[in-house]
Amino acid sequence: MEIRDYLQTNIQPGQKIAVLGIGSTLRSDDAAGMYFIELLGNLVKKENVLLIAGSTAPENFTGVIKNFAPDTLFIVDAAYIGLLPGEAKVVSAADISGVSFSTHMLPLPVMLKYLEAEVHCDVIFIGIQPKCTEQGLIMSDEVKKGTERLVEDFYHAFLEADG
Image (cartoon, rainbow, N blue to C red):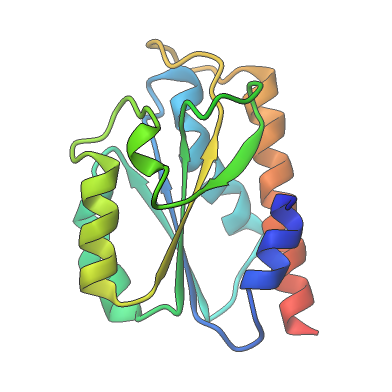
């Protein structure tokens, strides 16, 4: 299933949605989750949508997410998911332990289990395949464009949910 179709199926009218972007802006393509939140924040201004730039310590935002009480929490991060650079996919909880992440303070599988237990909502992880996560301030064109496509997919899903 394409991500746009997946989002349109999983973002329903009236739902409270939290979106947590993760990554380091100092490690090239690892900044994809942060770039995603920045772009989506320019497009989406809704009371039922919470956007969080979680950086490299997203576990610090569990209280904010819990207080918001979302129906669904989406987590967006660069991850080695075996695709071409810039391509994105939903990674199931069962597959998350086999995915490589480079800059988290807390391992993502541990954080996801903690969030599910604390926040009591659906947690959906979307990985964006990086090209390079070495130290650097510039994202690759492929990951930048892929992140922009994902922002468009979310934006259209939010518009469709509004009717």
